[in-house]
Image (cartoon, rainbow, N blue to C red; front, side, top):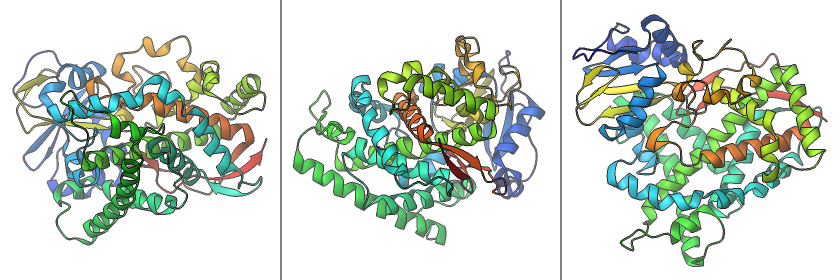
Length: 446
């Protein structure tokens, strides 16, 4: 961590802009940022054209960025480049508008309301498994995506998305694949009519058509049906104003991503890691059998599923659904001992920090037990931050953890997963961290 205040930037990787855009950064961003941390330490500089970004790897500097200096920063260029998709939802909006939206959305995530969705999460996991057969080979990631899509449809809209599931799933898949190419997202705005951008615009319109249809139906019902959208429709600000259809569209697309894509990824990586680690898998099944005894899990069981919680923490350490974060400087500020001016960038990656041997012994190994005895309280606060931190910490973190725990326990009650060793499993660093080619596994009934 840098102590002296400096006006200059620290050293970092050299090379042409062309090499940065089309070279290692694009082919393997996770390896690229890992290499930077190994070569340059806790603070380094990335340069693209005249745009300089301070890259942070120390938890204290990251806390300074996300908590102490949050008011001097705004969302990074990648999120701004994807504003046409996310609009001005909680993920991308800034300043007073973001604060108002956060205030309006907060009641929808009250603990008691979120807990009421537990039975829905279990129900849709069980419904999906009715078509599964022991001995068949399936794509775990595709299955988890379908389950979480159905869950978010019910909890967000109180709507059964069965008729829309394929279209929504395919559209989100296309949009996230396009968003994964950060260089093109930044350099080629969505209004430029390239084949890539035309595909994105068609996909966004497809998604909006479904969302606006459901919003219209909800407004006509004019009552709280227990879902997040009906609460967002009903809530009003101090001045009596409510969210417009456009604001609701932006928030629901954000919640779609948070409640669908990220949870599906966390579950997929968790099942993959368990299948690769038989000892942890056996201990996991022993806990499920001891706590549940073959019945479906419920919200009340979660405090007793301690090893399950440790498994999820360790999975999100190694494969964090949100793998990196970036901010833009909007007013002069000092971070990590460096004076920054408006237009400078700051970035950090959970992927790198979560694998730092200073905070985690054998950091590349899957060891759920490391989370015993309040381990999280013994490491620096931002050595582990899968949901971000500071005022912009993910509003749905409790929802996501409950969903992942209940779906994982429900699925594992019925099946074990034996991996197809010939199928390559590689992380794709898109807006989220997803398996690039899915995860193929053979089902084995328990």
